[in-house]
Length: 490
RNA sequence: CGGGAUAUGGCGUAGUCCGGUUAGCGCGCCUGCUUUGGGAGCAGGAGAUCGCAAGUUCGAAUCUUGCUAUCCCGACCA
Image (cartoon, chains in turn blue, orange):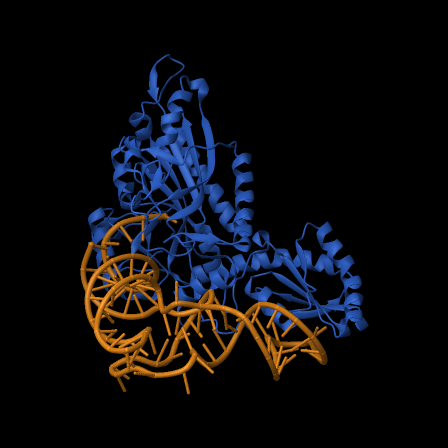
């Protein structure tokens, strides 16, 4: 049990903030709104990065890198795009500092003002499409399937570690296609990749769907998304994939000659997930004892803690543990054997538990006598004592069990917190309890905005698997053909 | 950009109303001994220009003024 750790039920957001810091994932930095991702937190992101990167490559994508700075004029080329991002851009205006004539350190050199100001990228569509213009002449140049891993800056008013920071890490895929169909298929394919990753690596169940026009990415014709439910019942957008139509191609005059020797505008997509996924991971699985990690993303999958009364006994345990470590490593399992003497076993138990290590093994004098070892799994906190013989096989199996159990637990929770609501009165009542509300909606932005104003709930998405059924809009009573998901969100 | 609050060793805080010894405590850190099956105990030790600047005073963490920074609540958002 971790001391002085606030419970989820008492104050969910404080629980989250404290967890991030105490589990050594990240900390606040000297720069407002920006965080330092600490080694343990970064190790988790790195695992996400590696798995996603492989999935992108398996679907034919290649990595590239585009500049951090974007000429101010580029941003205004696409009208909706600039409107969406203008309010949160960091702007570089000068390129030199000088000694303050009054002796107060350094100041901006007024003589070094940039001819054209530079925007620190909030996203890279504009710089990338200005580049693609030079890459694309013929249908033979298509498709272009590029991804980049980068940092972006969005000057946010209110920030929370991982969920919303002024600077964050992400990947952004930017693809160019010859036909509308190809581009739409690409956007949907990448959404499937994201859903696959969320569910099979993060063990986070997600709803695939399309955003309402109101929630659409600035400059897109359609925004597809995966939505996850956190333990407080709020929704979290975990990834988005956009069908951009020909908007950027037109803004940057990217045309190609088709087989009929006619000029056509290129069709585009973009898609991204960010370090926000860390927030989703934390808020889906963790409990009042700290972080809970799915084995596939845990930097340390097994922690081994020796319990002993003397140096001699420690050496005995070291010897006993060595083959276990080797057997686990041979199975590709990441092990940490912690035989530091400055911490007591109890301290280590709490520590690894707090950091979400999926499995802990403990070996003490009793085990030495019996040839046994204590196995504790993080998801259920169940402890059993079993023979050391065959322990690696057992642990390997446990990894799969824990991974599956975490997903099932989250899926069950989501199912229990998802319900159909058919009247406005009921809606106002139910939205207070959190969770996803499946409701009919008349399809208008006006209704959506009204509902948001009155209840703070937004349409998270129109689910792909929504059943066609006739109904009446929860708010206006007008006809509707399918239910959409309403929820309060991060 | 509106409304509210706070600023004291690495972290959390007491003291501020009502000015007066060496700025107290907990956690953490260092040393030593004893410990080790769920965050060990004892002893000793290091660490603070009390956010910054000016003012009032014999004397300021404490009172006054100005500045700065941060946090919370709104508008904005992956």
